[in-house]
Length: 356
Image 1 (spheres, one colour):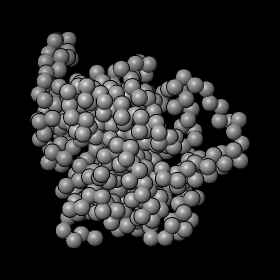
Image 2 (spheres, rainbow, N blue to C red; image 1 turned 135 degrees about the vertical axis):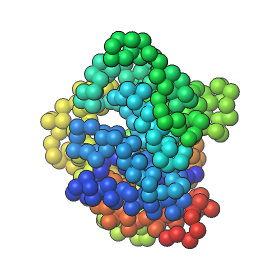
Image 3 (cartoon, one colour; image 1 turned 180 degrees about the horizontal axis):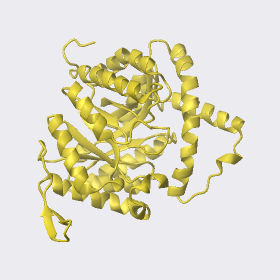
Image 4 (cartoon, rainbow, N blue to C red; image 1 turned 90 degrees about the vertical axis):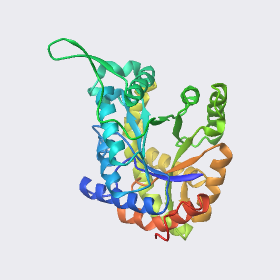
């Protein structure tokens, strides 16, 4: 079991510049404390997640401040990018970090995000794997068929060449078992979550993923499953709950408008205007209580270790610690010694010297 840091909403500070500084400070601490990696998302056209229109740019800054931390997009929406351009940018980043890059990809779900390629929205799920295959081919030195400005058929190869021979890939998966199976067949990692709180389904999906790994002739133990969990660890449980409850519930309320895009992606209708403020408050409180019941790393180090034990039993290899869910940057920084101790316990020997 390993721990990594994950960012999602960008709510650490009032301004993007302060948020970036905090992310870089947290990355340095995670690097010293032996965390497995750092995940940065791709988000567009919403105040929720506004600092993250391009995770590769921010990961380049992280590369300059770290030595061992694996740099991961969590996740690049492949359907919003030209694969040739994406292969170039990934190769630059792989060189900047000395071969520490891994790429998490997603199909996308918010219709407004597809302002870049609106014609791709309906085919986004199938197109995701086509685009990943193109990026992988270009990463290995393959040629890209194109036309020049004069209409001439040309074949181009992206430069620079990356450091790594192969690009490790993660697939973002929610509840669909077919996404887990697809990743298993392809031999790629899975980045998922338990926002719905259904641990049984998570275990079933992970088992299906391992089965496909086996059927493809691979060792199921070589598969990688990372689960995103909201994280805030401190020495006193009551103080942790008091610190987190308000920001967490407000964070959930800010997520609520995104439900329209998610509902559209799943061909469902959601009328948020019919929900009263009281109903939204009740939903947030109930969700928080479920998160505290073994579905987050919110609590004491012992609470966190208990939850990590549950995740291990479900077949999880790594927990992506989501830290920017309404808490301020200074609060997140203050928890890092305790979270680092948890990481020391589950991944002994990963810490760099006697780093605090």
